[in-house]
Length: 511
Image (cartoon, rainbow, N blue to C red; front, side, top):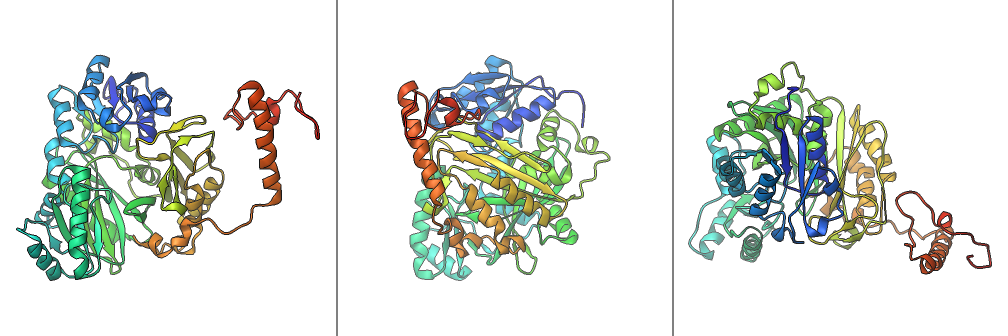
C-alpha cells in the first residue's frame, strides 16, 4: 500500500458500525474524517468516531442521511475532498455519485454510469449475458398485460422467482410454486417495489433450488484493471437477508473459484467498473453458477475477505479512488485465502417473533475480545437504538486456521457477547452455528426456512436462583432509584447495583 495519504479529509455519508469502521480506516491512512449525524443519532457511536461531526437534522433517513444537499453542504463546509458512502442509504444511488462529481469532490465508489447499468437487475442481466456470464433462465422485458405475464411465467416453469428490477435486499421478491399463485405474487411484488424503489418493473427467473448464495469480491481501478479477492459464502439467510457469511466457501474448490472470479472480472471490465463491488451468484448442487446481481459498493460482509486475504479493502478503496493502480498496490501480495473467517450480523430483533425489529436503550454492552476476534460495532452501553434505521448493532467476525476452529471460536465469542436492554439475535446466531448442518457446511439459501426451530429459544425453565436474583435486583434497584434518581440497571462502567448503594442489610432496609 502507498504510504502517502490519498486525501486530506473525507466525509463519511453513513452511520452505525460502517461509519465507525470507515473512520478507523481513514485514521490508519492518515486521513481526517468528517461524520454526519441525524437528530436521532446525537449520542450514537459514529458521531464520536470522526475528527469532525456535522449535524444534518431530522430523524428519519429521508430527513437526514438521504438528503443529498445536506451531505454535500457538510462536505463543502468542512473542506472534505471526497465522500465515502459506506453501504445502504446513498451508496448505490447514481444520482448522488454524479452530484458528488459535479460538486468537484471524489466519490469513493464506481462511476455513476456503471451504477446505472448494474443497478437495474434487468440491465445487469443483459450486461452479464453480453459478457458471457451464466444467467438463470428467465425474462426481463416488458409485457402488455397480466395475461402475457402469466403466459411467460408458465413458459419458464415453476418454481420461479418474481423480482423487482430496480432494487435488492429481498424487497419486491416473491417465490411462486404454482401457476395459480403467480398473478397475486406479481401484483404484491409490484406494490412493494414501487413503495421501496419508486419503480415497479419486474423480472422473472427460474428458481435454482436447492442453491447456495456465493459472491465474488472485486475491485477495479481507474486504469481498466479489475482484481478478484475470491468468494464469500452467504447462504444462511432469513427473508433474503444474510445472517452469517464466511470465506472461503466450504464447497468452492480452486477450479470453481477461478471460473467465478474470471466471470466477475469479465462483467466488471465490460462496464469500466472501478472501486469495490461484489458479483453475486447462485450455485446449484452440480457446481454450476448463475449470475444474480452486482452490488456496487462495499459489502456488509467485507471483513471476512479481509481476514483471509490480509488486504484492508477500505484502505484499497481510498487509494484506488485517488488514482492509484491496483498492480502497484498489490505488487507482491499473495491473495490466496488463508484460514477461515465467519461473520455474524448482530441485530436488535426478536427471531422468535418473526425477526421483529427492536428499539430502545442498550443498558449494557459487552463485546468479546481475544485472538482471532474482531468486532465492528456501532453501539455502546447507554446508547439508544432508534426505530428509524436498520437495526444492526454490530458485526462479530472470527478467524481460525480452519473452518472447524472458526466455528468453535464463533460460538465462544457469541457466548461472551451481551447487548442488554432490548431483544437481540445473539442466542439465535449461536444456535445456528452450533447446528449440525452448519458445522458440516451443508448450507443452502432456505436452510432457516427448513429449520424454523432455530429461531426459537429452547424450552428451558428459568432456574430459581435466577428468578430470585432478578426480583432482588429489581427491588433494590427500585429503592435506590427512588432515592437517587439513578437507573436501576448496572451501567456500562461495571458498577454493580450493590456497589452503587450506600449500604444494605438482609431483612432490613437500605440506609
